[in-house]
Image 1 (cartoon, rainbow, N blue to C red):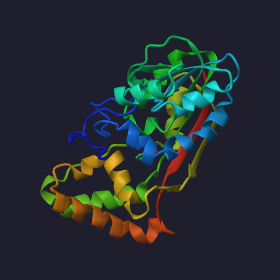
Image 2 (image 1 turned 180 degrees about the vertical axis):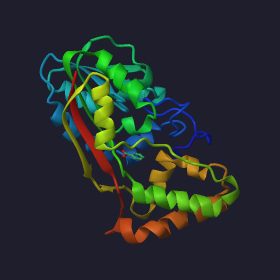
Image 3 (image 1 turned 60 degrees about the vertical axis):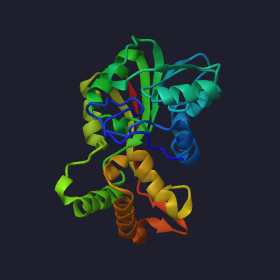
Length: 274
Ligand code: BEZ
């Protein structure tokens, strides 16, 4: 099954603004759950950090297929899950028909002091307008409410991005442009934005989390196809294969171990109070 339903770089991804935050063209919810379920499985730790309480009202920002919303609800909290991708919201509603899910753009949140906490896992690195997100989150929270989030931080997938960029230059020198789908801030940068927009930072950390990709030898190319297929846009099958082989050859000594690819993820994790 292919995850790529369009070849354009701009498009829909969880809670991103397609004009400024290029990501996968259209999220394939089935593939996301089947091959990339580590995204929400790792999110369980972030749910623990959220420590949801019975009766609390919680916004799950960029809820994807809804698994973490469902986990939060188990604590007795009430959850609204939002995502910019209609495909993800449809999948979430199907999987958890009793929960509330809505399509919403993280850069244009309309909530007004409705939540005790805003939770977000593995979403904010897709959005190149962090201030708009932070301001929307701040407005959505009651005074004293908390923002608990984890996403890619400074240096995330650095080795993979370098290999992609170098190969991009080699394989298609005439069309080289800057491909930068991601926003990976440092602790200092993001803490400053939070403080400038009405938050008190209670906890923030940047840590390496090498992440095993499913499917053995095909793991890296599946990941590229799912999360940054723009590097492959416009390549015929032969060039596509050449491109992927080069990236794999470059990264294999560093990122392939015991029959599995390991993405060099680095996470920024935080708790901030409104
Ligand atoms: C991440 O979760 O850090 C991530 C996911 C897809 C592409 C790049 C990074």
